[in-house]
Length: 306
Length: 318
Image (cartoon, rainbow over all chains, first blue to last red; front, side, top):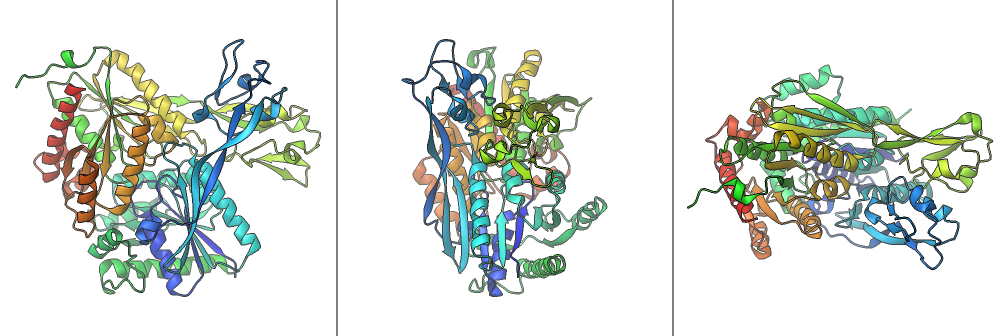
């Protein structure tokens, strides 16, 4: 069986992406499936908090750092002239000064310096972690506070995932990617390798607007997608909200109402759907998760088996 | 107590800039920005307020303020992308073999023996255009987003940025949005700017908070919201910008409350206020109004009004 890769996204922040990614991962695990959960929200990785675990085995993620050797530099200005990101400041007849926060890491300066005065050094911009919590393999990317280049950490995670799939094609049945909010390059990179994209939204005008923006990105990437409406009972407008989505051609996977057990599971760091969690199996949240999971399995089998 | 005058507090030319961030998304940044903006507008002590939405991926602030007139749209062309000029290509494949592109945006098409540019991965750095001996790549400016602005029905100038998907320039769009606000303010001369920030701690957040006078960090009493706000406070500290904390949904019933309160106590964070959970907040969003306007006597509104008074004191002492 081929590994199925499912990404969870949604545009708006705080709609329940991580909650849903974690609990779906747990439910696949409950079925004795081999599951890898990858936290691609590297600005604010929360999966391990919801699983009640710790981050282990940090690996540094390096990023290109041009080091200028003024002994070799002839102040020719070629590097600063060709740096589109304006990351190299040079006053005439002075040595160039790197503005590292603007550097895109394209390495052009290092490649073109006629005097070999630029060395390709590196700095740490974050970490990746590979750990195992509740019999789930969990990979987490984490951006170092104060650094901006979060996309480079997601690239690292995706690169690791592709390498793993190449070396061990049967290691995982399911890979679930939890993405950042928004619709920027971090999200785009996280979605790029997914077979299925789940959007999580909430029944407010904020949720609706941001969902439509993320849908544009998903369509641009040519991905197949379904939407979950979380906190669907918030305003008593569930039916109207769903109808509007339907009218816009947005396919719905299911909904999850407000539920006390979900809040408690979140605060405790014990996923509501974990076998050992001992939450009320007749609770509204629990039942909704079962229903969504059933729909998910139907969906991905339908698309996966040819 | 002396009634404070803005003239004594702020130089006429200067705008006091408050940014609202949280790290985690969905903890109430936009609702709180909208309410504080509304309160500043109706406060006779304040000589004009201007609102900015720098969450350029998901600009929602405008949903809470109906426009009075037209929405002004200014397209942004601050994004670069490489373009392949097939007629110049001699199929040498150096672009691939010598790895011109550090972003894996160049792939080789074996059939036609030409490179293909992955538009979304391309950062527009110009390396391929410079390095190709045949000059078979050019760098073009493309539309990266737009800045929209209007005056709300309650006469607040509102400015928000909107990225074009795939343009990979959220941080730049934020800076453009802030620069545009400065320009608009030359005519409206507001003395207070309130900025709704994006979630996260990366590029767009750094672009949002640089140059601010004060940061409001929103948190909820949950492990993930606390974890994320600590990270965004780390960024605020690196920029040496003073900050205060607002605890939203402060009365959430959960087993984490004790730990949360203990942590906040130990850090000695400056707590600007606590907002209880209140359905009227979600209702106000549905009704497209700030909660202090929609339900001025609700629990949440009462708390936000207190917060507003606390922030006002901060500004006087700044």
